[in-house]
Image 1: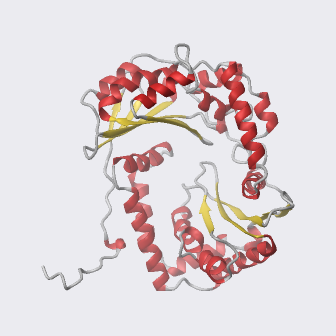
Image 2: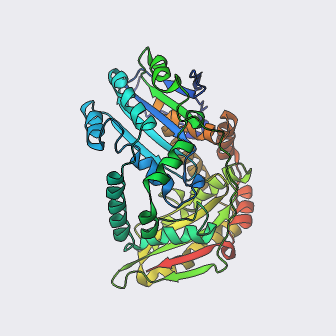
Length: 426
């Protein structure tokens, strides 16, 4: 090998990307378990997913509060004892509540799985929902909300979702002091018993697994029909958008920055335009070298960073352009955003820029497939949305083959400034 000669550069788009398949097992009570095995490190990730997000709640904030407080005490152990036990083994138990789903995720060393699964079972199947823990949660969340409401960026996120989806829709509903005050242990228990059931659970497992891992899962999660309940039906909820498209809100008279949001609806991931829009969105504001960054950050100096993103909601998606800028240049920032939208409509994307974006996106996907933990997250997204590997490979093909003409046509269809909701919070 002649080390004076640099190796040939290979574009990321030339790689033949393969999505490693998962193994599927079924516990005795019917819970599906999706597994990606890896022996690289003696760690594992175990995630339990329930259809228990805000979409299913009848009272505001019940889904998030239920998910949070399940870990804060059982009939046998206090919140302190549970947390100390987890920390004793150097593990981490995280919980999250989203619009559609809620999760509990355990990260631990492989050799401690057998010690931690009984504790995880206790958290999932025997939460206490004590009045004392609920009161602490209410106080903490209200204090956090009071602080966040002083931040223009936080307020802007709340209002733009309300304009897009309606204040009573799960995608547009927001927290409030009144909602936290209204929480009752009985409401949390009722939501828990209806949604955190064996029949409403999927398990995603990755990493270096003990030889008896499936036996352990069966013992603690598959041997009984815990919280037995009927099949959940996902309700169809109407979207009620705001009539007015331009909004200005005064939130902090002493602030020096304003939060800018420019957003519109977009079809969900099942629509054929969605993977194409991922490419167009990357060009517009999806990475550091995007059009919005180059113009509004690098040339104009209005902001430290500006981004655009596609929401991956199940019912409907949205394209959201968001930034914080100096109060005196917020309106100018919106003008420049619209200029970039019109430029994508009127001018084809140059071949060099399109090639750069292709390589960036393929490179990002390669990074997302590095290791069992990343792989299981990719599969989880597909499985929970009733998709398979064909959807993944189709997206790869779109990135590699989409043309400048297709992107320009897409921009004309979806990037008309008149279709966007516009918000400034200062």
